[in-house]
Length: 154
Image 1 (tube, rainbow, N blue to C red):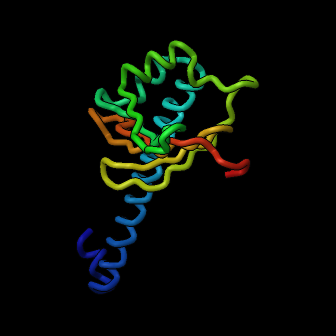
Image 2 (cartoon, rainbow, N blue to C red):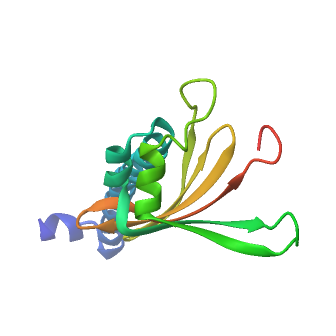
Image 3 (cartoon, rainbow, N blue to C red):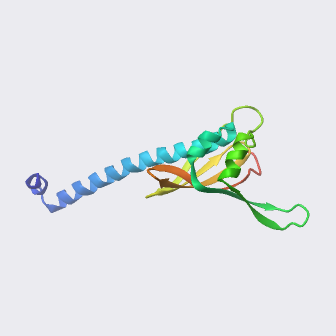
């Protein structure tokens, strides 16, 4: 094999190796994107459907969900933090259910590097930015920052 690779010269061999690495990296990235997207959907669909079990499988044990809220009286801003138990209880109680039946979601994997990823989930009323990590061999949500959609089409 070595004679075959180098029979056309070192430059050809280098191009062959680089092409093989690019193809391999692309296939790994594509499957990671699919797994990250699946975890994001488990998170979002679990929340909106009130399926605490599905939501739980998408969350890291130390997951948190945060948003900046403004006090309507004082105007002072603070960070509202929900831990994993708050999220699971909210799902069980149907807090995330939107009016009008099944929720339509748009999920985009924005970036993935090694064992870290960022995804954006948009529903009719909310935008969630998810930080995901590969934990014990599978992708899970570690942190969420979310807010309401200010205008349609956002």
